[in-house]
Length: 634
Image (spheres, one colour):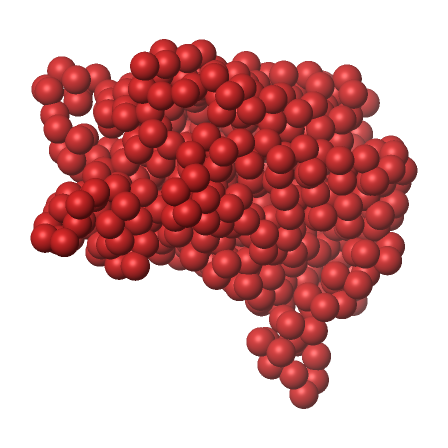
């Protein structure tokens, strides 16, 4: 959808690029290792939030304030170096308005921060579709079981070898196992290639398409939609790993990172809440059946995904160079396995806090809350006997409660550090889940679910931003994608275990309340392991040196042609400036010639013109050559 617009708009941007390159030359644009915010770097309209035709209100003195004396993040460098050949037309930029998040230190908008906000906002409705489609799948599976003449109780009669009430949790198990095995490999693949953006865009496309195809759901096609739900769930996790690799590039300041992650979550929950409200309003207003509500939810989530994911991955996210080369006599797949093994050993030997965080994530429902969603929808549909609209209302209460939860996360990450904030959120979630299992004893007590959903929403909104801020803070820089793949592995390799326990109990005929309560056990175990991480401050100090090294490596990635070329360009620019000075001196010298008689006036004027023409020609040749080399470097 967006690529034809981008290519059509490409000619205009090439003209803008040409005009820019024929303006004043600043060699600081391609400096090897910029350590401060350089006032010579052009601010885009996106970064300042202003129209490019409006004169910039920020003075040079304001730009030189001490607040801006900070190292540039990878995202800031990538944005400054972008050619913007795929910049969106001005009429499309209005899409960004609700998703722009200012950096709290520079007071500027960053393109990839806007891309993150749009990405998580699109993933919210896509993930929420599981509530509507999942509940409809359980009902259709039960209806399919009724067609069996030998079935006395459709809730217990097997469909494709399992009970109808177990299909969501079994699907979650399949997704979790496959993701746990393949995500670290994918992380290593991205590390050794420059295809990070391609993988992010491709996973977003498949994920969105899988949701869009779910509008075909019916009694005859429910199993196909079930398979699509598994495929979409897998690529949702893969997409999360890719976007998480971009997250540390936004900033290396913990306060800024806490601000970014909480603002991203707020936008996700806000869009997800609006999406759910629209579905519920239309469903109740038009008195739709459960199946029609599921189709409406899938089609609306598909539309949101096309617009927000398509825009962000076409225009906002930037490419990244490969972080390392494939070793000789190896291929990308064997290298991936070797690197995973080496990385695991390195983390467990050198980074204590990261090691125990990974162990804690073995028992925490981290993977986009897919496990919790599958168990919750099954419990509310089969045990509490809620209709799709009622489940959607529960989701709505939970979603809007996520917003104060995200604000609490932002506050607590600053007050008590992200590690303690993560622990507190897990404890709140575990207690709330245990209360649900203990007090919601049947359909007659379904009103309690609405109250508990608010507490669960606060816990979710608090827990996930804290966990992301914590992970980014203690990860050694330069290996984000690979280690995020490793973190995903630890989150997925046993992430399906709560679903397995719930399914096993359900298949054995155990009351679902016991299966639901098992979530609290896993959360408490996860929280206990975090106490082995040690001091958060010590963990951050352990990886500070890797941040500086990564910034320097990234700064020279795009100019690996060597320092000699940069030196040559700088020397030629100095030569051009020297000639400019000579030009002025010559002009002054010619202008100061002693006065001649009128007969010799023409000769003097001719000498002036020759001198000026000579210096102008030499200057033009050198400047032209410098511009050509700068274009090649860019």
